[in-house]
Image 1 (spheres, helix red, strand yellow):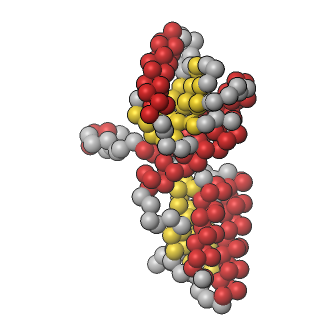
Image 2 (image 1 turned 60 degrees about the vertical axis):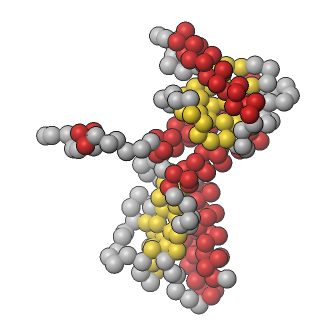
Image 3 (image 1 turned 90 degrees about the horizontal axis):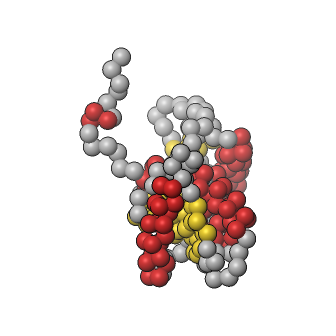
Length: 226
């Protein structure tokens, strides 16, 4: 089906560049190209990309958007039809898309590091996991978070974050009250996992702010008086 093929291209783009959504729109007025997020497709249609945790698309991301735009145009020519308005993942609320992206990073980390699971918590609350957390893992996380708090307090003046390692776990704190925990069922390379975890926490630190609810106090959202 024509729309199924278009939809698959949009979903593939989201997965490639870590976008929250990609869609084809037909606005009343031309959009132009806004930091690579709105790409004209011809005939009044545009490819629009919504990302989280980034102000501007990187060159690699922008190139992926351009490739997808060409693929969409080619698909329309092949089917000899106009490009319809179509969303990449319209059935998912924004929060679920972001959590899905977080868990995609966790699954990749667990796979590359040989872990049986990777989980992230924020202020003691489980946000996402590579796979559903077992009861034993959940009970251990509570204890590990207390150890992490003690380790961070011990490092006051040196660093605002810390990491813990054991025979079958590795944990690192990051962002504001966030903690990444990996569980293993066999020996693992601490240095390799620490390096990979550092890369993933950078990505998660960009995504986690998008999960915060907007402030309820109007004074916190109103413009600063000039």
